[in-house]
Amino acid sequence: MKFAGRTVMVTGGGRGIGRSVALRFAEEGASVSVVARTKAELDRTAGQIREAGARCFAIAADVTLRGAAETCVAETEAALGPIDVLVNNAGIFLWRAFLKLTADEWDAVLATNLTATASFSRAVLPGMVERKRGKIVNVSSVHGLRGDANLSAHSAAKFGVVGLTQSLAREFRAHNIAVNAVCPGAVDNKIDETAEVDRSLPLSQKLWPRDVARTVLFLASDDAAGITGAALEVYGGTHLTIQG
Image 1 (tube, rainbow, N blue to C red):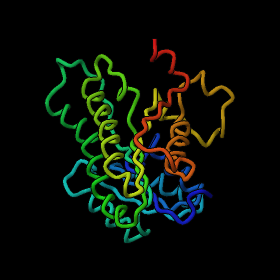
Image 2: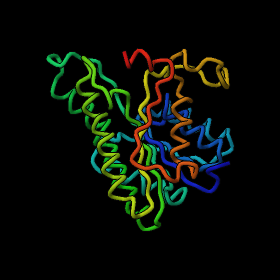
Image 3: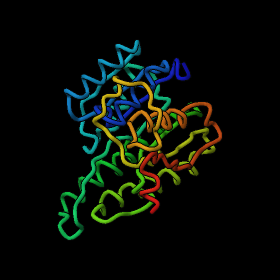
Image 4: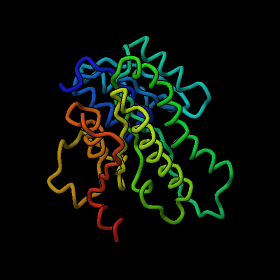
């Protein structure tokens, strides 16, 4: 129970990586706040967290709206206590040829993937600074380290997340606050992780959300006390394809 007594906030927690991250924290004893836009998905995640025996606070919110981050943080801390760990996972993926990409689509991808990450970080950091402790883990992407065709907005946003991570890590290290990023390869977000706990060949298959979640929990744990400003690659079976 590595996170007993700690409060964790996960954005984009309604499905996929976010849901798996939230459940892994719950299994390790944390009180978990989950932010998601789709209420049905949010309710399912919250129900699974409570079934795991953890306290949960669910917030239906659009992370791109001005003031949403401050409201979510204030409501979470009123319900569960000070936030010890923030996981910025909310994001959208858009595959579009650059010359067909509209200004509105560009803005939506940047607002969700990058600006919301900055907004939620800004909302939790004053409290973390005051308490002299805290962990922020940002979910970037392989495309935040290597750009690809038809992913200009996504790559720009995810590269930005890595840059933001490194900047905040340097700025807040004197306050004992670690800021790191996880860069996953292709993830099967629709897999039913309740059907099987582990796989025998994770490096030859598409990633499961749990594969990414385990790395997030490591960076948020005391085991990673000496790590800040890192962008950890979690590629699994997609590694050789990405490198080729």
